[in-house]
Amino acid sequence: MQSLIIKIISIMLLVMPLQQERPEAPKVELTPSQVWAEAQLSQMNLPQKIGQMILTGIDGKTMTDDERRMIHSGQIGGIIFLGHNVKTESQFMDLVGNVSQGSGVPLILAIDQEGGRVQRLPLDRSDFPSALEIGSRPESAFDQGQVLGSAVKRFGLNVNLAPVLDVFSNPQNKVIGNRAFGRTPETVAYVGVDVMQGIQSQGIAACVKHFPGHGDTTVDSHVGLPVIEHDAKRLMAFEWIPFKRAIDAGADMIMTAHVLIPALDEKYPATLSRTIVGDYLRGQLGYDGVVMTDDLVMGAISKKYTYSEAVRLAVEAGVDMLLISSNDYVDEIQHTLYSAVKDGEMDEARIDASVMRILELKYKYIVESQEENSVD
Image (cartoon, rainbow, N blue to C red; front, side, top):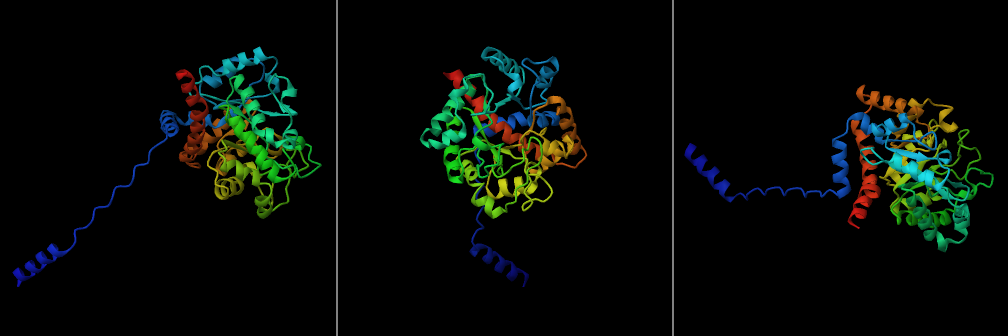
């Protein structure tokens, strides 16, 4: 009987089809920017990673020894240059050159050069019309973006905090006004994105702003917190049309607005809102690039939150880069995020995700550009 069972099993094994081997999963090819970014990230300790997320300013027209140490130690990932840093062309070029030396990982060197009433470079202001003027002659938008990008590049910078994609829908809005390309989302979308791509064509990263829209406000967020009484349906059909087109066209960076939208988040302004940054910008609009805060020293944030609270909430919301124009608070930001990770209140992988986005952007606009120039 036992031999019969063995024979039956043997026959069954012979007639059963051989189990097919599982095909190996296709290997994902990393892009050059990912390879470089991962290599840089693997060599960083936690404070250096956090540093990549900080964009801060310097106090004057030359660097102090403390500011030089801050840069060389890897405490920050970039510098924003403001009006008080600029006097003459030669002075500003020297300053940018000095800032960019000895930082290890290349720095983001950013400036607000929108044109019109918001421009920082020591150049003839008449060469840079306001956004509203450009919107009135949309056929020139890409060319005007090239002019802006070329001017920023001339001084050794690599990021222009422009263009503004807010829709000038409220005539009482003095903060935006002629910084917007028009009064309809369609005008802003097409003209603004053409300007963005013109800037990018010069090897300069463009940071579009201010998501989720600062056009229908009357309060200046430098002073207080604007409140917008629109729901998601209206925002998607109006304010977010320019941002969606920019995302589809390859937006490098998006800056958040310090505005409260109770229909989306009753408690937190957009910059600190997991719902607005995470669910809507990252989720529904599908944006996976660098998200930057507007300046955290502005009254809309600093009057209600400590810098530690604001930074923690912003990172938890999904923001990658923390803009704080005064370097007095760099140590506080470092300590806040370092403690959050070490105490187990924040996963280091959350920091890594932001740093990877920032490093990939740096590769595209700094490292790759330097390699191309060396070949030339």
